Length: 273
Image (tube, rainbow, N blue to C red; front, top):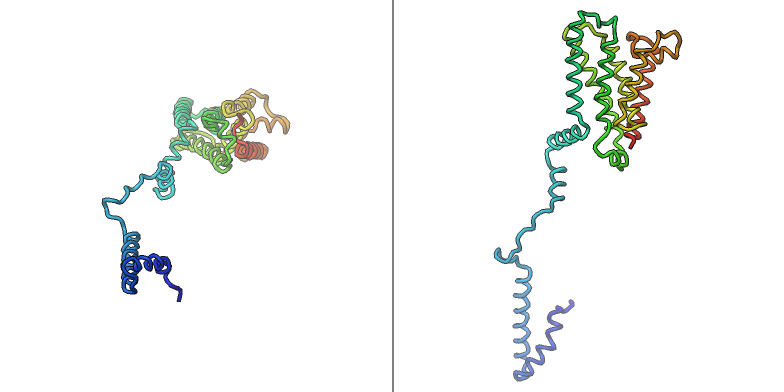
């Protein structure tokens, strides 16, 4: 068995101390026992917990630690609501919703005064409403800092695609609510087709020219559709896809192509700086 390190280190000092008091073996052993007892008390005091008065006060957590704890351990629902609120403000969603509501009220009033003249056989007024709403919704296709939004490490492709599709769904819901109020307006398929294509144009404009000019492609195409001569060829039918009734193959495929192209370009590239 290995001798205790304390005993080995203590033996020479104890021997000389015993020799100083008479050189007897009894004095030597007594000195060893006394010093081992002192070592035992020191080890016990070292491993014992400090008294409450001597304990150091607990350090306050850092601000980033509190934020991380709130994100990881906090209520997921509250965090999601806060994120959605900040996102809506940065994309000017309240202003866009106000414009959509005003447009819906104007459509309801005009359709009522027209006495059915703007019904399913005359899609001009509903198409004008859909174009105005698509242009109003296009203001939210860019954030406050376009450089940060475009060069972020996380491109957020699903979020951008969801933004375009959700804006189109809100526009569709607005017109269908007016239609459900008893106004003679085009059917749901017509509304979905035109809204999807117009929002695809707005998304394509944001990707190519920036969010501040995203309204331009819907405006130009809408103006051409209203002032173009009656379509007699396939290119003219493609250019006038906004006005034919639902179920027209050329109009449906044109709208689908614009929706896919615009949403994809905007989702991948984001708004141009």
